[in-house]
Image 1 (cartoon, rainbow, N blue to C red):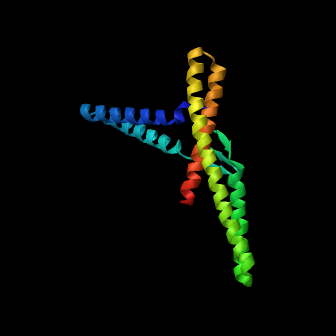
Image 2: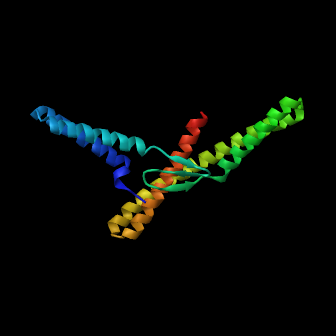
Image 3: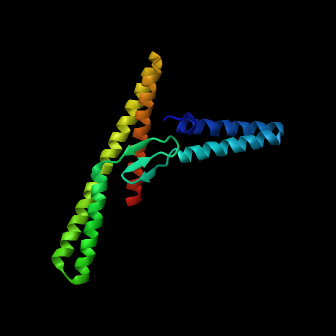
Length: 175
């Protein structure tokens, strides 16, 4: 699942290489080298931006670059559902003049927001934990020469990255 070309580190390396190539082209007067450097730098910037994105697939988050997928914490989807139902109850209560239904909807909506936020925080924390454990495990496995274990840890890192970024994107969207 890991793809070194889509990693943040690789994007920084591409940007730095492109910048150096542009500078060399400018100093030597070689416009071809300068143009190649500009392209390399732009590719690096695009990779960096892409490495910070996730796509929502129902109760899952996915990284379009690595293909890594993480199932969102159930509290996130349950909380979202409670918000939707609560909001509908609140609207119907307002429309028909039923204060009890309106208040019940208001409470359900608020409880859903709280539940979703707890799920987001849990996913965010687990994502950070999985990224760290996966990165350290991959290094240890690489040192030991165990490619199978190294790949397993890289997958864990990628899944953690998706979980963390998915939660961050949801939190930013709600803010």
